[in-house]
Length: 222
Length: 222
DNA sequence: TAACAAATCCCCGAATTAGGGGATTTTTTT
DNA sequence: AAAAAAATCCCCTAATTCGGGGATTTGTTA
Image (cartoon, rainbow over all chains, first blue to last red; front, side, top):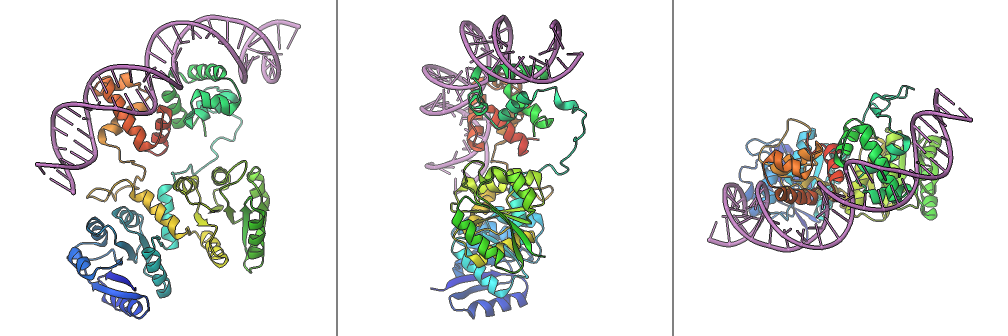
């Protein structure tokens, strides 16, 4: 059974080459080609695709909007974005809208077919640079310039915490309870409490949450 | 200039076959192989890799921890995870830790080399099923509203908190106790508790400290 | 209309944390 | 050597948080 592909793209040339590619390859069938998404629901209903190739830049309803509509009406149809540009907003918006893949228009024909299969099989093909962007969304904004104080001067925001106290504060920031910290640091529960009291004194706080907030915001712990 | 690859994997056989593959292919050089990550900083320092292949399941320091350490010390080295399993937690944790790729151990040798090149060139190769999971993380917080927030960097880590929940989380981060939050928000103590329970569910945490740390680190509250 | 999310409130018991006292043993500094 | 700081441990009481249960009202969505 051939994989049914429907394409939305306002570029007629692109549409033609994709038709040749898809209908000319065994195992693939071009179920429908459309120059815009103004009737996307109808178009999908009619063509009954397994996979949709969707351009982003289109007059009228754009590709992002179209994905939303499609995924709402036909959640089982997988949509792969195919676009010339890859700015952050588009990538992110497309994924949030429910796209299952995101490839660039310079992708080689053979690779496009591979991607269609991949999407059909439940994968999420992405062009390398897009994949990197996607991971970027998930990765926390890391500290860039990472050596502010290698000097011998004590950090003013250090609050004179002892090494052990910093260690315990670090555990706290990771979400550990006193009991867990005790185990982690191989000391008794009561010792943890003692340290905590001292930490509170030095930080001028009176609860775990305040201590954690201060520790993170003032970068007392890494 | 060959791409320098360092591998961390506690499976000796895997290490051997990767050595043969990498050192036997022009354009690649195996810079170092290590059975664990207990001295990861030293190992990386010594071997000076362009790309690191990192197993997750390892005795002692595991692959996720190791990525964090590596990215902190050597932010320019790209790390690709290679593991037998692909449970959600690992994938997510690895990416958050700073991994630049995530492939499964059943990946074909030729493809592994491709992935190394891709990582080296700034891409993020992922096995199809992993890529789908990654997109899933981004799609999870229910379809983003009608207006695609294109102004700033998209906040991925919104966790679908309601306005009131965000308000309460903000209070928490300021160090308030339940009682203080209740007064501040003009609601009863029990209502604060209810909101807190829901916040914990959505954030996947189980204590105030964890919630505060997550809220600050992931910029859920400003 | 029915189903759902959001926001509000309540109770119980168990676990955890806070604040107030201590004390002893190492290190480090003066 | 004496003083100070750091790290370890203990007890008691009060306050707070956590994890289960609920429930009601008000909107919005399907």
